Amino acid sequence: MRVELGELAPIERAVMAWRAVLLAKGVPAAGVEAAGREVMRRVWESVGKALGDCRKVLVSPDGPLCRAPFAAMPGRAGGHFLGDETTFSLVTAAEDLIRSRGHSDPTLGRGLTVVG
Image (cartoon, helix red, strand yellow):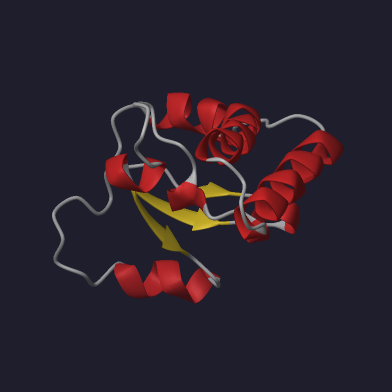
C-alpha cells in the first residue's frame, strides 16, 4: 500500500517549525502541541488511517521526516504523545527488515511496511 503525503515543501516547513519550537526555551506547551499537530496533520493522519489498528510501526524516513521524532507527535488524546499509542522502530537499512524475519514475535508478518 502506498500513502501519498502531498507536496514536500509544506511538510518540510511543518517539521522544521516543530523542531524549532521543541528546541526553543520558554515556549508554552500549547505552542509545542500546535506545531506538532501540524506535522501530525500533514504526515501521520494519512499514514495512521492506512495502518488501522496497527500499533507497531517500522519507520524508514526520508528527507525532512528524518528530523521528525514520530513518537513525540501529539497523540489523539490531549496531553499524550503518539508514542504512548504506537510503538515506533526506525529502519535505517533494508537489512533491518530481513533480520526481523527470524524473530519469534507472532505479530511479525501482520502489518504494513511504509517506505518513503
